[in-house]
Image 1 (spheres, rainbow, N blue to C red):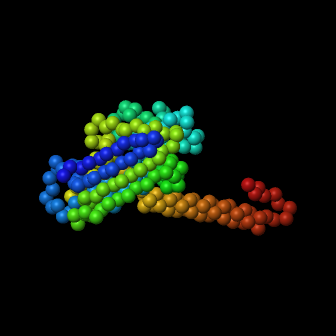
Image 2 (cartoon, rainbow, N blue to C red):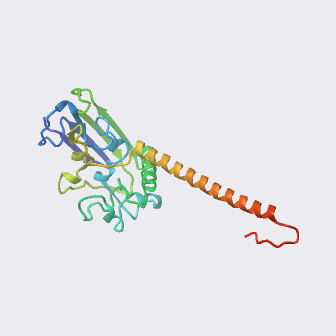
Length: 242
């Protein structure tokens, strides 16, 4: 059976029904079918992160800048930031679409940006949504088949607009279903997941702790030097303390 993806919109509500029976890259031959792994970064079983984290917003909608709340504008590509898209293409087809893999000056800011978006999505700040997964027909691989039923009532500052991909390299629904053999794994669709974010947060806290300890040590050395000068100060003798 062929994979089937149906998406339609009615009165500001998007309906998605996805029946997945096999991997998208069926043209690739594998030596050992028992060692298949999804190339989708950190994807566990079926592709729930794109729905549970709100990443599916990117291929389904664009934001309307004049209607978008000021504190939400940073989550969408603009004419200024669209050239930072981590894609093999440099055109503006991502303009006004959700930023999934931000390109900031450091990983901590990137992780915190996506953590904030995930929290807003979970809290329905981008509209009410509901998703159901059916894995009752799993063939034992933990991968296929599965079905996804997704509904989303999107807000007034978004507009339904299906992303048109030039080829599979930018097609989210294709990329998340690519499969490789174990040992031949590589990321074709990167995003910040909970484990990634927690790792960066721990690293940032450790860096701040080390910086604080260094400053404390420097301050302690200065105090010790000052104390020594004070103790060496003789009555009637002028000594420069600084």
